[in-house]
Length: 468
Image (tube, rainbow, N blue to C red):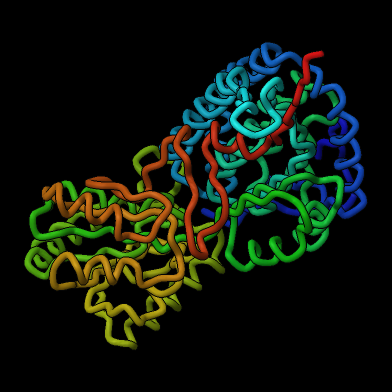
């Protein structure tokens, strides 16, 4: 762990397993509530120095960190794959995105603007001068999941530092190694206490971060239930909660079917479906459903399931066998309710083969709840209006995608679909690291994306000057 610039060991350990073979690959310290309090205290002390650093120096430090990570990109990619079972080609892409995200943060650190206020627009303000400045919020508590163990960490801590805050990070204990390596590198360039990392369980480490009054904001990515618990216990803290998704991909009868099939393939099976913005429901106009189905199934069965460390592997394991068993049960339950298995439906340990289901109705658990696995349910509808109705029939609202060559239907869909982002002719897994990212309904609160995260990690200070 990293507390106040010091890498710390503890006698109590947590074993980290490789999901592809269940072998122990490392152990990490088991942090507790007291360790977390020490980290928060160190972060508060470090705030005094951070607030006085010129933006230019912050930017330079972030550029230096990005260069160091670039030099160690192969190590990071291998750590991600060993830690969470992500195919190595996807891990390499995550590292590239992570470097880009740091560079975006370095650039935005020099673009944190205030504004002038025309006080003379109101009575009594004729001779007054008003302006605002953006100042650091304080200590940022970051809690991250296993599925993007480097990039999601960077999306929280780099904007925080760009805005001159300090950070206490709790990475997922299922995949903490990339975050710990990142902290080791960052510690070279930042003052003690600016970045602190505590590994441990949510009921101690996470709970202390959420409840501690010296933490100004919580940025959390994870489950709806945990997000609801955070919102109940965080008090007056600012919150960014990026929770679950049940993202639809709509294919209308005028769509380019081959492009839609390719998008559905990428969106449904990226990292074995363990992606909050993964395609969870494929909604098809009945007039093209057979053509889509045949092409999609043929493409699905060609995906290679295997050891994620191999470059030609498309589908690796889920994060653990328990997760794969959960997916297996959900699929079996759907089959009992009348769904038909077109391919897949097979589990081997933590591996679950990419699965396509048809004859799926909107009441089935497989489409009502988020299915965090490589399962593609096909739902047939009669036209545009029913497609929109089915797409909105969920408690989630993260991202939604629609394939159509009708500009009028595309624009109408952007108004009617209930989601934080509407994507036309591309799958819902698309995310640029500078875009405002976040959902509605039970998918969470607030926006990530560097500029937007920085905005929420600062507070506005107003100055009124009366010239005498």
